[in-house]
Length: 515
Ligand SMILES: Cc1cc2nc3c(=O)[nH]c(=O)nc-3n(C[C@H](O)[C@H](O)[C@H](O)COP(=O)(O)OP(=O)(O)OC[C@H]3O[C@@H](n4cnc5c(N)ncnc54)[C@H](O)[C@@H]3O)c2cc1C
Image (cartoon, rainbow, N blue to C red; front, side, top):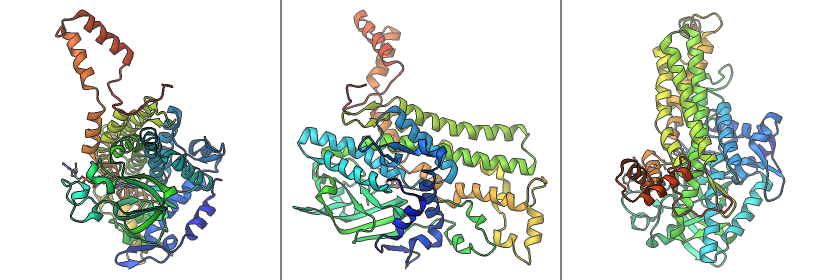
């Protein structure tokens, strides 16, 4: 059953006490801790929107398991339409909260695990798929938020997991028991993890047979004993403590934010019904291929939403200071809007051009999806630069809300910061300016564009592996006469027609006969 915002908040408050630290101190109540307030607000808003008529069809779907309405974040993609819904939802939600939805990554863990479990069962006779679908059904029925923990701390990058001097550099299996496994190790950069109900653990990199103990996938409740979390800091985290009285928190940029944390698993027991991979190194690459195809599609949706909002903020600033009609400002604002459309378009296209896996899961077109993520590591940075160009120096160096409201210098500051356009006040200008600051350097938004879901090189490596290089070479062989055999030239021309413009290969990923 879908939870309301209030039910979600109550479910988070009902969790067992968790070991969470920030600035060297233990946090007693995550739901009232100021630096987490904007994050709690963001995820609560996502739950709130589920019941609103204009949002219902975008962020909930009938479950293919129970027929009941469930969050799109707990429903596997089963068609191009589902994939496009995910893109549209990611963009729309980012336009509301301007940060991570907190619920998205769990769905991507499911996108990787479903087909990988299916493949293992087919090839190895294991029973992971059934187990995984039961877990998914449990998550759906309780409308839980799940987060994927992929990124291990990794130590020296040139060493394989089993070669690391500290085995905790990658989460690994300490012990296999009859009833489950015991795991230890670190995962870092975990977005939204402190407000998740379930943590889904998957490997971060391809593995060799010697890395058997590191090839594991499983799920644990976030309040499982043995977990320690350390909340990461951001440049603005002390500003959260300023909010109160007549200080609204304008310096935070907006009402919403996400958070990232380091997590350490210390000999955590995971019962068998929550274990979805245990030593099958050969299938780690498959799992990551399925996972990244969906995760990197989503990046385009949410970065599009972020860029829309950034463009809106820059456009407001231009209106305020009277430069909205200047040719170069209009060009810059349009470039920002086109950046949003470029990553949005790539995300939609990778959904449409995808294929169905025999498990019924829909796999976005991998080459396009990695291209989408690659583009997200570049174009939003130019949009940020343009927004800062329009924001101008005084926007960047603005006095704080505390000064703007101070008895001593408030009037002095507000008069100086008044943008000149009578439709706006100094506080409006501060609001729009801090919004840009939040996106540009107050939060991890740009870090997310660059690293979240893998960095530029990771996308390039995957894009290279899903490009059909023989096909590309053949078309030039046929076009230039390098290929002398007329029958072979005919074959190449026929292949070009059949492909209808697609240059990708799906490599070894199994494909259903439906498409
Ligand atoms: C804001 C934010 C949110 C995030 N949210 C999540 C999340 O919710 N869940 C999650 O699991 N992860 C999350 N991540 C982590 C993200 O997925 C990783 O940062 C990303 O995969 C890159 O890993 P890394 O940071 O360890 O860098 P690395 O992959 O180690 O890369 C560091 C640099 O070294 C290069 N490099 C690395 N290895 C090699 C090699 N062998 N040879 C040559 N060059 C190499 C890379 O190209 C890169 O330039 C988040 C990250 C950020 C910044």
